[in-house]
Image (tube, rainbow, N blue to C red; front, side, top):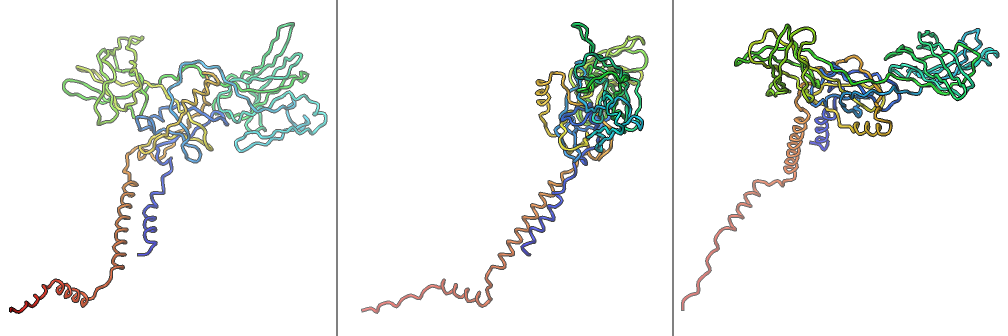
Length: 484
């Protein structure tokens, strides 16, 4: 055995332990995220039914956000939005002044632009080809919307003080700065003064013409008069206001009938980890009966009561039916059961109501970002995002919200295999390597002992034995003195 045997052997055995699976391989599915606008540090995503159906853990820890490098970013789960009407937020937009006449060979000027791969404008130059065009007023505005994917409801413009201003604007949209499409929206800028009164109109309403994932990256505002001199100083986008709480979503489930000990029950499988807050019962025809509701987290667990007995009924089709029943707390159990005493005509359907929760994440690292869910092996790390949101709301007001991000289509990853428990083969392999290493060390030590032990011949062994016998023999008695 050479000196390199031990390191080489351990290296070969421990090598597989160093190779870990990519984080995405631990999840069942993913959803690409489209950011409402680029450049912000915190974003919020409203979950939908497809996400909850992939989650496997009752604590929702197998729900996370990964960046473009596949690494987890700070992520936290928040309760559904509170029922608070928030004012429409505004964000500043990049803008560039242009001559008030459209660029063409006859207008005497042309537009030269430089944009990155995402379409964000980095430079805009007006190249005058006719000296007469140099005197044209630059009261038109080119607006870069390429970083905004939230719903823009209006534009808000400011300008330097003027004696009077009353000019109409037409709105044009483009995705490439070459082809422009007129929009139905028209604006009007007004700044008039009479004695001590002032009338100002700065808002150009778009009336929902720019929805989510808008195709138009750029807008152009062109005045309908050239004799009005004014100088724009800022352009802001007014985003759609967030009004009210997330509405309750309902799942309608068909049950499996069970008969035992004179009691009829119906069992239901939600197929996911939904935050259930309300329960309702749907049964064909007119009916009235007392029901009990139970649930459990696992198919082999005991049933737990979730509501006191209540009477569900329907006596006509004009609102004469029992209301949904609130549970008083969020329940994420997957399996549910309705029970009643006596016979039941037909099979009731369980309606489970929930309000979608919100995931907030910090845009750490490079994008694109993806939401991942469904894993028996990965768990989201704790992040202090509730403290972050609270601190920012103290600074900016209680209405502040992170920028919205939107879920894309579901993309499968490891599927059901990610939600299935697996043996920790790495731990067993490690223990095996340690045991094998101990045996190798013991064998190596025995080899060293054998090499260093002195060799004894058979003759030497016999001589040693004879000496041992002589040493142990009794001495001869001494001669006695003769008698007198």
